[in-house]
Image (spheres, rainbow, N blue to C red):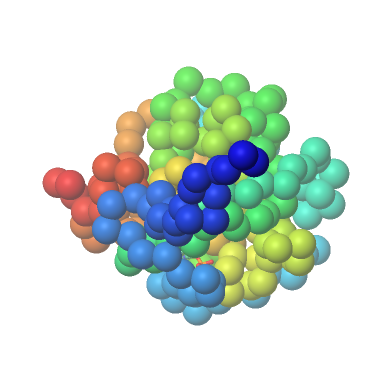
Length: 199
Ligand SMILES: Nc1nc2c(c(=O)[nH]1)N[C@H]1C(S)=C(S)[C@@H](COP(=O)(O)O)O[C@H]1N2
Ligand SMILES: [Mo]
């Protein structure tokens, strides 16, 4: 008699969370920067979208903050093999930024304060897949993690998420950014392990 639920308490559900191939889990937040951390005063901060026809759309800090923002919880995957699950950010969807931008270009070069660049197909920035993030874990984004604001494109390896982003340049042809010119993959899908050119 009685209700016996086999497996209740006996079942082990400690299976590893789904990580892309070759990745390991980390709980801290490593800092990976190819150079010194630029310090950008908010009153001088700008973000510019430049189209292939030479049109420019620029937001200053207060204009960015005035745009609708969302909370984003996503896993992130660095090409150096650490992954961090369930990271929480606040930022502006690139769908919002691109609402009034007229372009026929298929590629984007992200530019950062400090000179870092990385290339991304335009469609990977749209449809709720990418943000300009300015908070992490409910706090203003720390400078070493890309503050005041960084690109957040969690479905690609994290080198595509340009810290200290200040420009999005529309391009008709794909061109390599900083790491891509050094041999990293042009696209960088963690689930297909596209770490280096030829992967
Ligand atoms: N401007 C800039 N953005 C950058 C980098 C960089 O060196 N400069 N490093 C990239 C790499 S390789 C990774 S893994 C992530 C690291 O972000 P984090 O330092 O916040 O962990 O930022 C990416 N964005
Ligand atoms: Mo990275």
